[in-house]
Length: 354
Image 1 (cartoon, rainbow, N blue to C red):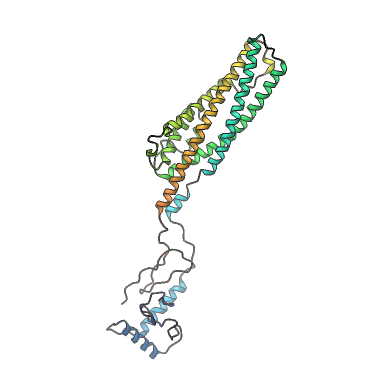
Image 2 (image 1 turned 135 degrees about the horizontal axis):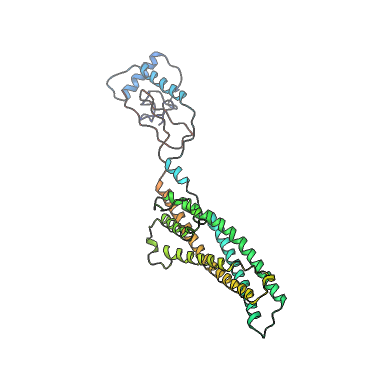
């Protein structure tokens, strides 16, 4: 039974074995005033119940009890305890799941736009080839204008979707790389700033993003590559299948342009040949874009799953909330009960009684 005055657990049902005060509901009123004789009698019965040989005056007990109550009154107002350092550390890990979902949609839409752009480019290249080499087919000006409009519309749609996809992908890429620094599985060779700058710096943009993707994968995989054994799409294979078509698409686009030909410049056979070649290069570039998009979705899905699993593992390893926030015992060996709002922390151990 808990004593309402000192907060200690009493071994007797009628009287606290720590402070000697009567317990509520035993016929005595715990806080009623008593005279000196009653105090002495109470102290004697208390010592007798405890089988102590030496008797001590009740004034000592009452004085100690008053000290404990004074300490309770002087105890500052309770403030919510702060989470432990481990919890603060884990709270810095940001989920990439929402960005991954947006990427699935944007990458899918971009692949559709790229396929549409490839069809438009190949169609116009075919018309131009017929115009130059097929003497039996008559290519009208209306056919060429229709092909130009189709290419222009597909190119605009493709560029808008690719810009939006690139922005979201870089944000997802940077957040995933930032999480790696908190997972504690792998020390990346490049700083997290390169997760953004590596896409825009000349020359190094050809391999830095793929290098960082390897670091992100290794830093997120709690199995340290054991799960990739025997799988056809392991880390190296999947990243290579994504990065090579992506870079090939970029190079072909640089040579072929974006297929926005100028009809007024088609005043010679050489100009028609150049536009036809540009359309074919652009068409092949968009085919590579579609292939890269498929593997990009698989890469985003795999890394997102690995980071989700690692985050859950770290939270599980952090264990239950530690016991913190318990007030220390006061001088004299009488503990101060915890404030009622404190969610954690047992009562401190009692000091030995004199």
